[in-house]
Length: 178
Ligand SMILES: [Cu+2]
Image (cartoon, rainbow, N blue to C red; front, top):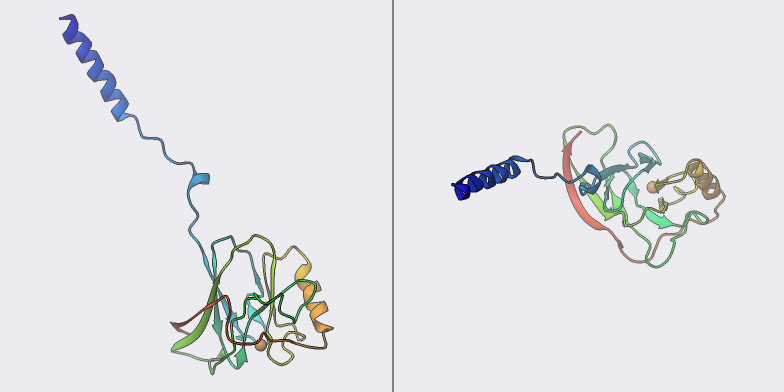
């Protein structure tokens, strides 16, 4: 009898344990789903839209190329219009007829890269004098620095494109309705 009541007691305890909800991972330990930031290149003149973004490590930046023939090159903050080094991100040049007035299903050439740092990243368009004219882009720029970058860019006597083809990006196609 003692054994039976002990068993009942044990089963009751087990039942209570089984009914208790399993611990859930806290919000802070849940992996963040990477975000793809679409950036329209040359849609609204010599600009990237948006001109800068806030992004986390692991996020992707997807460039969509509008007319006429733009690119994206990584520079340092101090020296715009000049590739930061031989490993600079370079989207390549992408001639396009798509404009802000285009309608219907269009096919963009895209260049996509992954954000691999929380440090600020700086970019420009190496076509003609687009860099000097303010066609610049930034990821995680500190407050107030975008304007400074553009002011320095405007003083540059050269706008330098990397040699060779695209670097550090994945070139693709993206269809969407405008
Ligand atoms: Cu351009």
